[in-house]
Length: 305
Image 1 (cartoon, rainbow, N blue to C red):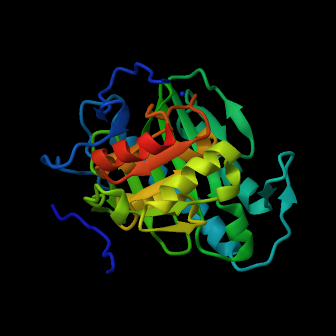
Image 2 (spheres, rainbow, N blue to C red):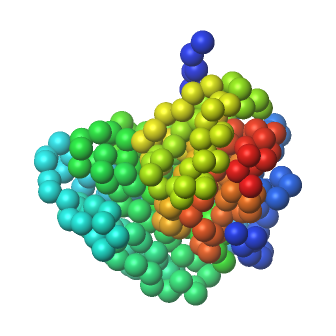
């Protein structure tokens, strides 16, 4: 099986859910190497998981297609965003996409819960909960900058087991499923092999989201890395998975911001945790860091923790 890698130029909330989640030390990651299992539905093997993960993955693709159609039709049209109670922006497109996705989930999986950015939570106590962010990067969407995406995740017992990142403007789609290799546009991908901070590329979505103390830690990390790019939103985590970026770090996140990222990063061989090295679940706090390798993650946590 071919692996795709992009070219490059010179809080402990672990829950017991009855399935194997690969871990290294205290953080959630995927070991390098090993064999890749055969795939079936859109790159996902239907194993002994009941119900099959392939069914969930196929459904995630279908609703991501719906989201892409709605967002693409609205892109490029200047729209006045609405300020929410926390002063963050929302558009009618955000709401239309989430409404559509929630309706599809209710029709296909009536016993599943849903958590979305725009319309809150239903059935959070259910075994399976879908977690969706219709447009992660609404400010970029409003500004016409193609660095935003739709995030779709499925959690079981609070732990993400499926994650999808879709960029409707470039057509790129990352899919991560527990126990399977992450794919970009249906081609398996791997993270970079970077282990040293001095050669690492780092991404941060919004430096204003950190407290003064946390911002100081991020600045300490930034100073000893090769360079930093800002404003990548969820796309930066997809680029960690495909080997373009080595570290992506953010603060002020909610579950709909990070749950989809977990299977994408781990399935590509990377690590993603909170700043204390704890696995990310529905109950985690707002600090998140993803890295290309186990050793690089260890170096980053030494600065952040």
